[in-house]
Amino acid sequence: MKAMYKYELARAAGVSTRTLSSFIEINKEQIERDVGIQLQRHAKILPPGVVKWISEHYCIDI
Image (tube, rainbow, N blue to C red; front, side, top):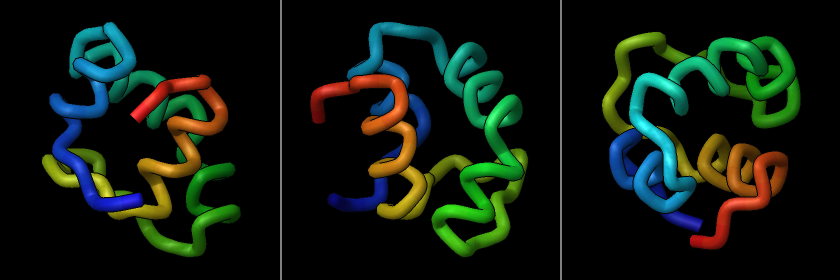
């Protein structure tokens, strides 16, 4: 898995970047606990661990 821009992951999921940001915000504490990093709300690039977590939990093919 590699780091991705939010817009790239949103496009792969078929949603807007705003919707993807909502997904992330809803699950922020769980993602931070599972991946072990602190998420920045306005970050444009998502680290590989976060991309993997989101793609697995929302069934996104990358």
